[in-house]
Image 1 (cartoon, rainbow, N blue to C red):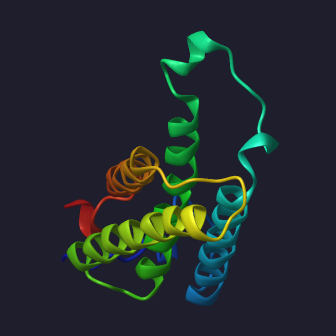
Image 2 (image 1 turned 135 degrees about the vertical axis):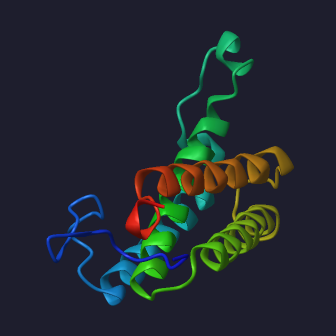
Length: 148
């Protein structure tokens, strides 16, 4: 079966599926709240963040932050779709497209609305990498129903 549904263990939903999401409404609420957190963090002026030394500039730690913000974004949306019993392949497409749209939106807002921020294509790419890594981890962590 290709449905993205919780794994059953003796008739009970497995604890692997973040037990605090008992319904699709809870998963949706948490997903939307996380989107608000992302919007808040991406809207803060650049001088609100601590400066890093020049040698750290090579590794661009802000890209890791972008990956870290969008990893849970995709995870929570996948959990929502799991509760809605959306096919796994369709859920992946939805989450990727939604991630691309939201990453692009945050960059557009940084360019046009937020003060002290600027749009940055590498940031959007890091956001999308976070989405893809989340999808890979989610599908590894929560195998298809029936162990397939």
